[in-house]
Length: 97
Image (cartoon, rainbow, N blue to C red):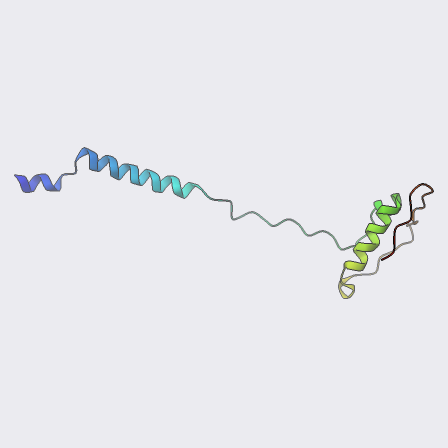
C-alpha cells in the first residue's frame, strides 16, 4: 500500500503545481506591444513651404536650415511663388555662422 501512495499527488503538490502554472501564465501576459508602427516620417522640406516660413523671421530661418540640412540629391524642386520672406522691425538680426 505504501507504493500506491507514492503515485498520488498530495494537496500541497497540487497547490505548488497550480501556483507554478499561474506564474507562467501571468508572465506570458507581460511585455510590450511589438506590433506598434514606427512614427511617420516627416515630409521633405520641399514638399511645400510651411506657413511658419512666411509668418516670422525665426520660421523663415528654421525652414532654410531644414533645406540646407536635407540631402540635395533626394529633394524635388519647390515652388516659392507664394512665399514672401518676413521682415520684422523689432527683432534683432540672426547671427551668421
